[in-house]
Length: 158
Image 1 (cartoon, one colour):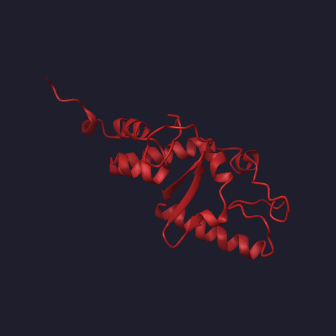
Image 2: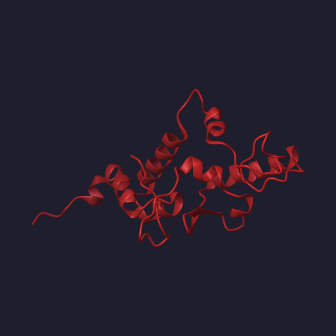
Image 3: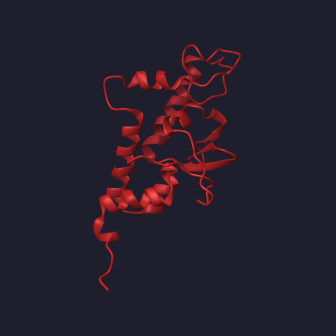
């Protein structure tokens, strides 16, 4: 299932957003708030706040620690940097192909994300939680919940 994107956080006036893998590649380190457990992403003219689940929160904290230890003089404000972009004064974002190269022999970033969404749908059956965690539209969240928990979405007989 592909996510069609999300407009403002309220879900109205939908506007196309970049693919999730590209979106995280352009996120800034300042957009990550470990104390609150959130990541703010720009989607067109809007900012969308995603709640980080436990594993993602731990990985983000570990990444920031590693990044600071490995590249303490990095001038690049992006959350994800490579060896080349960390010290580049033009502050480029990590290229999507760099991120995909990490998973070159395995699943794509989009497939991993879809699997995480489906796993959460099976675990909770809560479309609102899917919207908050993954930044998907209400309609997309309902499709995941329908697949994971069809008994919760069946129509009543007339």
